[in-house]
Amino acid sequence: MAITIKENQKLCMKCEKVKTKSHFYKSMSEWHGDSTFPYCKHCVKGLVNLDDEYAIHTFLIQLDRPFLSDLWEKAVNDDKETLGRYLAFFNVGGDKNKRYKDGEIYGIVNNEVSHSDNPESVTQIKVSENFKVSPEMKKKWGESWNDGDIHYLEDFYDEYKNTYSTDTPAQRNLYRNIAIIHLQAEKQLTDGHLKQYKELMELSSKLHNDGNIKPVQSTGANEDKGLSTYGLWIKEVEREEPCEFFENKKIYEDADDLKKYLDKWFVRPFKNIFNLSKDFDVKD
Image 1 (tube, rainbow, N blue to C red):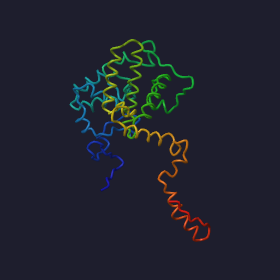
Image 2 (cartoon, rainbow, N blue to C red):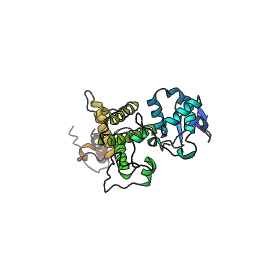
Image 3 (cartoon, rainbow, N blue to C red):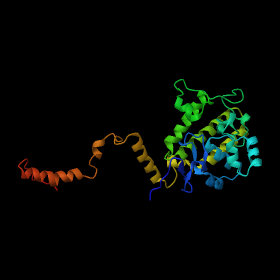
Image 4 (cartoon, helix red, strand yellow):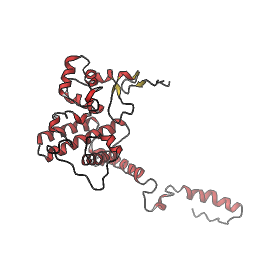
């Protein structure tokens, strides 16, 4: 039976119930086309442990909303609906357009991990002379990143996109978030901030685990993974050179001898019947 969804309604991807959009948290992420999170508020509350800082950050990354400890404490003290109260702070005022990168990165205060607005504190990523930042890139990553940062983010994201599955918006959003974390980690390592680098890489590892991203998915290079390797070869054929993969295509055009069979037992006899040929030598 088909589900009827009205204009002001949405289907929750978790509980699979149709609810009005007011039952969904607003999202700043470009991957959420209708600007709302795909899980309803009730399902989110059952998944996000408010006593686990990592769980809170993971959820805010999906919404592309910042974590600001002072506002979080205010939300905890003011209302039992902590998530809703906290996100309401970003509906008006100067914080309205703030994204995750504008707040406190997991385990690291924002003033320790900045980017283009404070070039003296964190190493700047150099940009290639041939790289041009397009309006689409600015929309994808935000206005506050400089050209070098966007260059790094685009390269990192494209590598994941071309290696792993991108079937769902959630997967693509995950690769985007991992790219941001690795950009921050790269800067911290270059500046000698090993503690911050380690914490960022731990967050990256958790995001990889959440997305079930493993090296074997891309290489197929561990024991007893012949089928994985074969599948990756097929993927390469389909993506890179469909129907043009083999240099000597003639040897594959009748691999099962079907054409040869038809010529011998159908075409040849009919030609003989209509005096188009006199080929009676089957050579079987």
